[in-house]
Image (cartoon, rainbow, N blue to C red):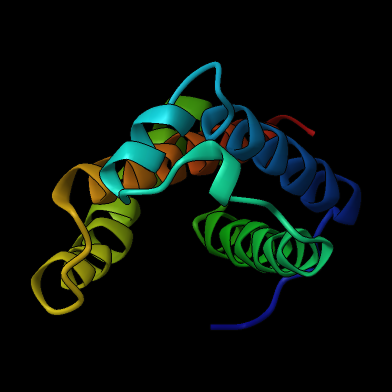
Length: 133
């Protein structure tokens, strides 16, 4: 794979949108309470540290950069084509790999579903940003 020069404004924007969706997804408004229950944790026992947020920000940027590189390899794409392609990548790479945590790491299946669904939403949103900016 040849690295292609990217629009870094789009990569940073995709990262910011992805982080925002992740924070909303795991907030008390959407899936946070269900994820905590699935992990046998209570909200008062779970705190987010700055180092966790920093680590997530770095990982989210790397994912957006790799996603941008991957999309660029296919040349101009419609948003629909990009979303279908990224959903296929998510299924084959993220969902399947994450399932190993259920099989080998005893991750509760419900927690797995919540996590991979959030990741899918984040990747699809990042794809839209990358293909429109």
